[in-house]
View (tube, rainbow over the protein chains, first blue to last red):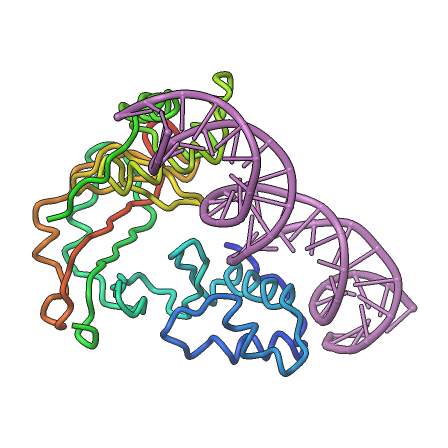
Length: 124
Length: 124
DNA sequence: CTATTTGCAAACACTTTGCACAGCA
DNA sequence: TGCTGTGCAAAGTGTTTGCAAATAG
């Protein structure tokens, strides 16, 4: 059982938290920074706060296009990525996906990552 | 129908090709470069040759740990990643995985990416 | 009061690019 | 010979870190 590290409620922590917590578009740190730039926040602080939120289990990360993206949906789920508009969407993880796990190979599965790439209905 | 771009058979092309073509460990460009360094090859050439091989369909790429890794197995398959030894292994894509596709959402699927993360039997 | 957090700039790691020269076709 | 490929160094990105000043508790 891991005790959650104590965090100070700074103005910057609240800014980053509020900027990401209801997003479904998987923004990068740079994108969050640009939106918060008018507040005078530093980009290092944005990176640090996002990392802290990941450590606290508030955010998950998604690597795409050589950038780390942040996702407030931390329960297991799959993604669909549109190669035209580059949008990443959350989607339910198929129930049967666990049946496909390679446990018979002696591999102890902790996490599944499932992404479909293609063209979303907006872009077709 | 795409006509394959003509490539010159330079010493460097052969070096990079031979260094990666039978690998199953998904090396990075840096790793290939380090192995070929004694030949005097430049790192830019390694990046360029690997990119050319991807363009020609000889290699696939796998993004992991903020680095691009190269995989001579280009037919659809899944990966298992061990969080202890960081090894990425190829594994057969379960046949039923296509049944799980989100085509009912109007999404046109081109590619599936399926990775299990956990601990391999060597590391348990 | 004091330990954590901030903003800035510099440092980092991976990858790409501009350019003059080398070498395949 | 002509044009593509090469090596080098510099530039580009995304991200992290060192440090003095600011500030939450």
